[in-house]
Length: 597
Picture 1 (tube, rainbow, N blue to C red):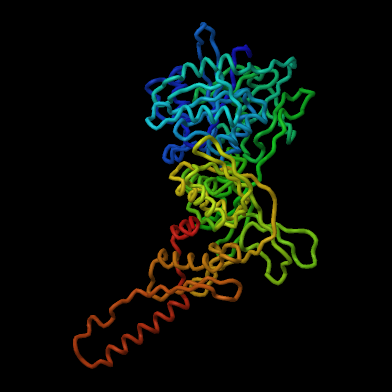
Picture 2 (cartoon, one colour; picture 1 turned 135 degrees about the horizontal axis):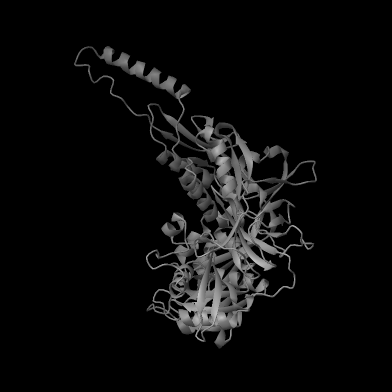
């Protein structure tokens, strides 16, 4: 049966049409009932449909009859394109033998096109390219064709043209899948061995494991063991994705499907990992996998302290489907108990926060994002990791601080090169090299501090290049730097959620930005509010928010002025008392706006 199976995924830069392309394949293979079909069929989350991006990789099984009348089973995995979700791409590739590299004919090769191509190449996958969006009036097929040949070395017979929106060329792609991608490798072992490449949580069935079978067969009631933990489970249900979960009696070598083993604790299973039959003497992992370290850190706290256990359950379940998101318990004075979390980037952080709020009905406070610094204390030889502002020791105790640097790979139009270089240099960037991609595009490599990349660098590049620029980045090591902690005081009370770590040369500019933004966002009270930014004991920026004025003399008609003065004095004393005792309620929008800065 394995010789009729083709396991493949679609990889591309963000917004090059992967999801629409998947929709057309589902339509042509008639894998979904016409009455149930809708656009973005594989994007199950509301968040994905609203933003028009793929966040989670999706697997789907399809039946296809080729032009020679042969029946095939296609297991397709649709992957995200954004750099923050490259982890999803990497673990999905492990379940495939082939990859379709999709390239937008109007945009050409972009940064994630290059990054995803080499990810697939590292896994020894067979790859062919499809130039998509050929129906658009500004499509430049010749330029894109030349780029694919020059950059990746594709031959003419390894490049196809298609329009996913119009459905043109899709059948040619499916025929290419049959002839170009290899069948799953046959194994002589009769013992079951599979790869868990994803998972999710179901309130009735517990943890659902997404599995690619490499050896043997698996049936309900079989006993399996997780290679990493050694825990044994009984298989309750197996099936495939069509695209909804459909039960099946058996999964054979080469097939992609799901297992339900009544696992209630989301922490028991790690992704990706290997599972085998209990009596299988070979427990070695199917693949060795390099996990990506988190790049951005922030604290997530419940607005209501009683929601902490609800937050803990939500984070554990979310981590199950997104292992690149890491967390540990934290306690932050005024905000109480919560979690310090690590993410692959700022968009990843934003998505996790949105999912926690929407899917688990949580009202959250999120602290300002930071990167992981290495701090060496005086008289010590071992560096300590500092991931958020309140972990930074006293300045007097610090010998030196190092921050992470990235090599940023930019693909931009030639006429925007000067502006892009200016932006990179303003972010403490060091020029590395540049290469031309055809006549109108080039790549520029810069070494940049991660703290200056993750916040809004990508947005600025998009703005400068009118949407035609793209970037990819990789970690290159730590370098010595000067970092200070900015604290925000509201009516002389420290608001720890707003504390941030910034480069010393930018501290005054950032402090001024923060206090001005907070002055706009905090609602006026019956008493005056002072908003201050401080480094240690030194105030470096300050704003005042005037009190709401109640006209206490409105009922005084004429008479002696002393009567009005008494009322004004009484009001002034009341405001002083309120200022000493009153707490300023900072709205959630203020935390979000400070994050966006």
